[in-house]
Length: 500
Image (cartoon, rainbow, N blue to C red; front, side, top):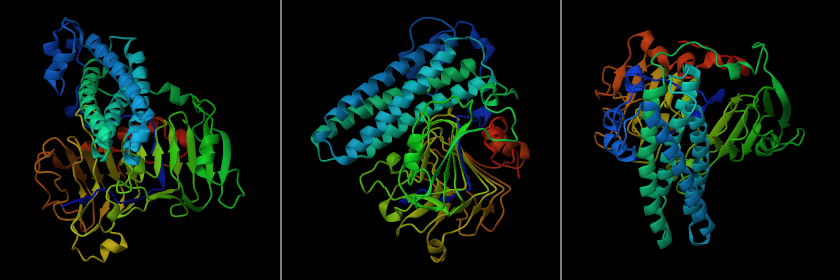
């Protein structure tokens, strides 16, 4: 059976920030003082997901984990430059390629550019010390190196999914796939060695100083400029994209957010908040009043990545009181509503309405894409309401709907204190391909309610957990999952840091 892997989200608040998460200490490495001393690469590589590849790429001399880590990140940066140059070369001869092949390469171009930035920033931090980093700095680098893996996998998925009758594309596709797979292993080694050498075992409560500098009085939101978008011409702009283009580039945030107020209306446009549009805030007039909608899909020649209606790759982005929508529908197969660079999705006090898929399909509300045990990506759904959309509800239970299925090997998702209606299948979660990821994923439920929340018939996979203690679930709250208390107050967005 095929699945409809995502459903309609109606969110009152959409927040993206370069803020990392620590999901479970047992699932990632932590800095160990014993490895500040010299060790062989055979010893160091035991702590990586792929020891054989690690030993293959590290130099043949004995040194400490930090030196090995810097070597891996430098090599990663070099490879990301090579990939970007190669993709740029391929795009120069795009006249021989299909529309879908060009889209796949354009995705890789953007993602490779981001990886160059992320790796360069990480290396700058790591070059300065052999000591465990302060928690805030370690978390920032952790997020950047996790995003590098996500970007690489997104590029690879797009290349592999794209079909073309062009023989030239077939050759490019095979060559790129090999290069992307090899570099993914390299980036995984970089992330593992970073986590072993620089990440403190315990997170402290230190303030993130550069974020605190943005606002001295957290009761107010500091705004450097405001524009209005209105379709009737009464504002500064009639389209959201024009307003984004007008926003200042590469700001430090010291003067506050650039605010785009979007009046009620259905905006049929594809919005891309580029990497240099940081500290951007959008405020709509309410759920189902300010709506951004699109209908791109894989069937129509788009990659999964660029089928998104709303894409954010800039740090420190906030959106409030808006609806993001993709209306491609089940017949068009895979499509995204929104894409965030960090891939840390926290849905709180939201409504989720799965729709009726095509005949023979099942619904999976989530399909999280964590590919490496040391990444800090995941989905937390907290205090939300999950009900069937009208078309699915009228199906009278014929179509099976699940809370999620594993898209990638370390898929991570939790539902906490949410209302789950009775249309959810009793098993709760579904396989994707045989026993793929069933022991490496992390799926959990905590104190949900409603007829679909009964866990007595849930799957018995090694990676599935019914959490009993609040301290286990607390790791997935705003305060811990997003470190929200350190940066949300300055946005003016109301929030509760703990379990509701």
